[in-house]
Length: 147
Image (cartoon, rainbow, N blue to C red; front, side, top):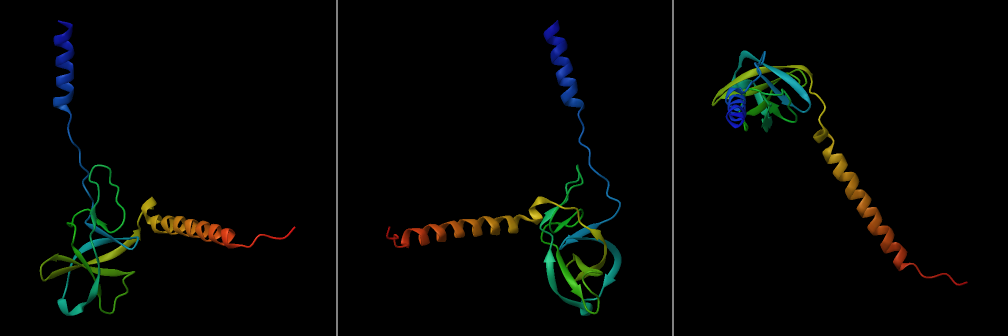
């Protein structure tokens, strides 16, 4: 009887667990540390200047976390373009579909993530090892002093 009750409780707990997902207030893309809200304003192809980036990862719809060039709506590979006459710190164009671009306006700075400083950490480690290697080489090539 106890085994049956225990099995029922475990089965009920596992079977009734539900997956939750966030409901985002707006579509956004992240580029160079800035969050841009995607608007409905269509950007003409003649107003595009050059490709400046693309979506590299999706925002986590359970925790709401994101980092790097991310989006909560657009798939990986969706391209960002600079708009002629508009600073990229103010707005950029997002490829909605082939031959259709929409404007995304800057909202705020993206939250900090440790991968933002990863290149600097790796550079520091490389510099440390290079310094150590050169110091050891210099020390081994030095002539001994007469005493």
